[in-house]
Amino acid sequence: MINLNYRDNRPIYEQIKSGLIELVSAGGLKSGDKLPSVRDLATQLAINPNTIQRAYRELETEGYICSVPGKGSFVAETDELVKNRREALLVKFDEAAAELRGIGVTSRELIDRLEGGDKK
Image 1 (cartoon, one colour):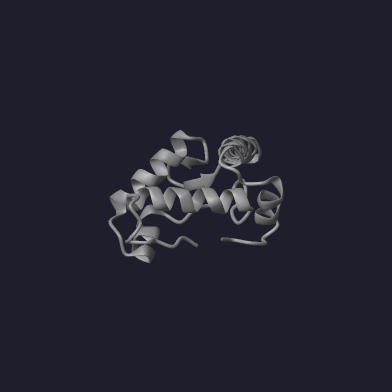
Image 2 (cartoon, helix red, strand yellow; image 1 turned 90 degrees about the vertical axis):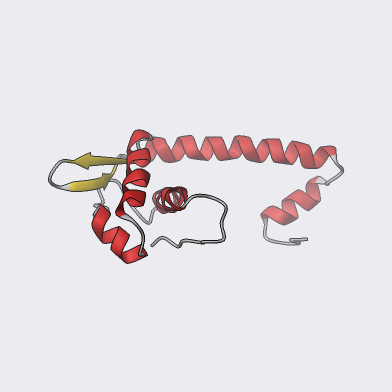
């Protein structure tokens, strides 16, 4: 489900948050799916429950999940969230592509990269 990298510079709660956002964006978690409890996920990942709680709290603030008292946390309605994330990533892509073009990378090189070609 979620893989932690202890060599990553990001805090663990951000890695958990990113992992869950990726699962939602990729369709691995769908609207209405129940998330593991804070305690269960903390046990599974062998980390402090407060770390999971912080990730869940931020995901709830950002609208990715919703909590139902006494029932747990669930994936929120994601269509709009995925659309917004897609748009934000495309803006980043456009900025990176413009910068790359500015330093001489050709359109063909960018297309090859997108299609999984030359990764140098």
